[in-house]
Image (cartoon, rainbow, N blue to C red; front, side):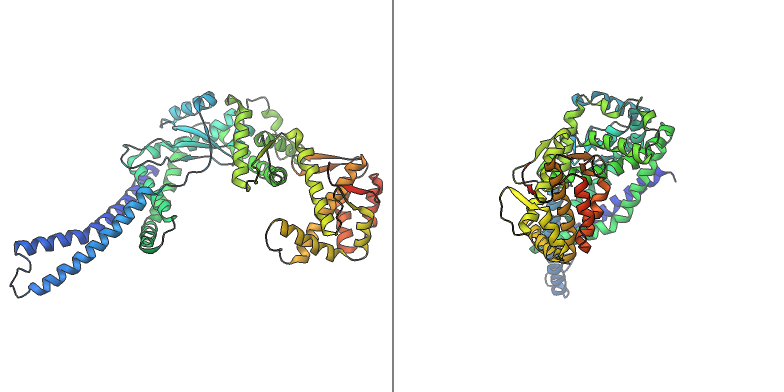
Amino acid sequence: MTAVDTARARAQAVLRLRGRAVAAAALPAACAVVLLAGRFTGHIGAPGAPDAPLWDGIRWAVCAVAALTLALTALVARAHRLAVPPVTPAVALARTEAPELYRLIEELAEHLDVPAPAAIALTPDCDSWLEEPHRRRGRPGPAAPVLVIGSPFLWWMRAGELRALLAPVVAGTAAAADPDIAAARRWVRTLDASLGERRRGPAALVGLVDRRLLGACREHSAELEHAVAAWASEQARAVDYGPRIAAQAQVGLAYAGWDRLLTRVALPAWRLGLHPAHLNAGVVSALTELSRRDRLADGYENRLGDRPACDLLEEPGLVDTRVSRLAAELLHEEPADGWQPLDWEDYPQQVVDRGWRAQAAALQAALGDDRPHTGPALDKLLARLAAGEAEELAAALAGRVARAAEVAPPLPLVRSGRDLLVEHLVATVCCAAVDAGTATAGLDWLDGPVLLCPAAPRAELAPAVAMAVEDGQDGPLRSWLERAGIRVERPVRLSG
């Protein structure tokens, strides 16, 4: 049996389960109709017959079961009619915004001899798929799905690589156009959506019905999707096979760069209510830097002569801004004042320096210093650490941070507090270095906020701070501060 035959067989199995569910719901009502008709025609339990009382009892019982079943069926039908399957958040891409990309996808679909996707959308993730449309009942025929493309692929991959990578995805439109497969998928999605609704009272029975139905067809549904994937892979096998192998190698690299950019670079900005407006352009810089350092992107220079996939967009910068905003909304809580866009050239001042000074202010508050514009002097802070007060300072800082976040202090408090004290002390030292004019705040595409200090090795700062906090040995840190040209008796400014 071929993959297409398997997919259709599994879809038909799901539809048979749907038919049995409908039949089971209608059976009590059908029995009640037969018993009532038999009563009026005198064929079943005629009046005056010896078995009339028995049939009357059966008739009442069956009618009661039929009424309850019909009521439950009505609730289930209403829930399914109102259920809206979840749609993955994505940025819709109109044809006018990317005519070349639409043309590439349509030519690919024609080459594969499959229906073209109805539309294209971008998601801030390293994945691509077909998003099945949600149709209200009564609309004829299955609508074509939307092709959702991971935005990092557009900026990192070349146009030919993107075409090869999307070939198996676009090939999946053939399965989406099959009436049985489309109907089976639609019913499973409806069950999932209905099951996700919270209901109380009698309506809670709908959840029990949905759970039983979904459990009965889960295996067939999973095998259906496996068969569809195999079907699409078979269709796309002869299309750009060589470039597809090369593109697959870039997928893992794009994922690594995207994940690092979000966690190391974007997250500090999101915490301040700022969203970098060109994350996808940033991932290219991050992966280029990764190639330079670790040689994980060998051959990247050779690819620069090929056309980048983002050139298929009319206005890549505007699209990048919309996708970057969506990434912030999906991955971080929106600030009270709303999101503010941030250009990469403003990152050192608006994120790095501002973030350091916010941490220095938190450390100042933990020390009990109430001066409004200046933070702690490093010599006094180091003296307290050398005197063995790290545990006390760590606990105070942990409580301060927890109250600011409106959550309970993390446990164990001392250990978490010590980690925070290392982090906040590093930020305070960085502020002092910037104030001294011997260093500047900078952006590292792989590590995020960094201190650019020519006079002292950056790699030695964290170990020296750790020794001061964990062991009370402030000598290495004082030595680093001296090499960096920082006067430890000078208070740190809390504003840039």
